[in-house]
Length: 122
Image (cartoon, rainbow, N blue to C red; front, side, top):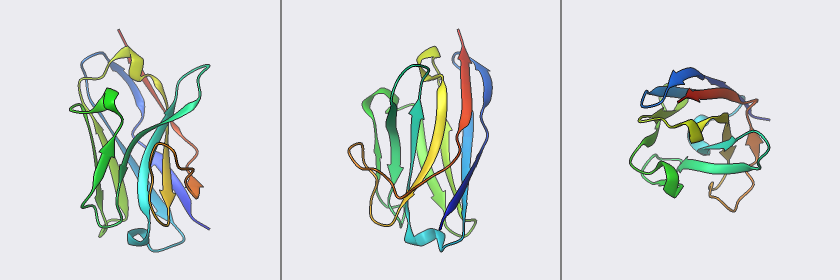
């Protein structure tokens, strides 16, 4: 079993930045592809970004390309989501996810975190 703990959410003004962190426990971090999803009020949970087990490959949903950056530090067992130029539409609960193979928009990851709230005021 993998437990994912997110941190770094909060309230920020439009145009500002936040960095989310996620630390898994219970298994070898480098064995898992990692990703971030988000769920806005009244909407379904959707894919945001993913990174391969080695960190050599990343993917993003179109709406965050050029603004968000996913990265991982396997030595620190942590995956990050750097969010810049935040917009009101980015307001959502952000969920960290882990999978033994890969994470993409159409996949359902093996493990989920509890979520962290990001609120962007306009």
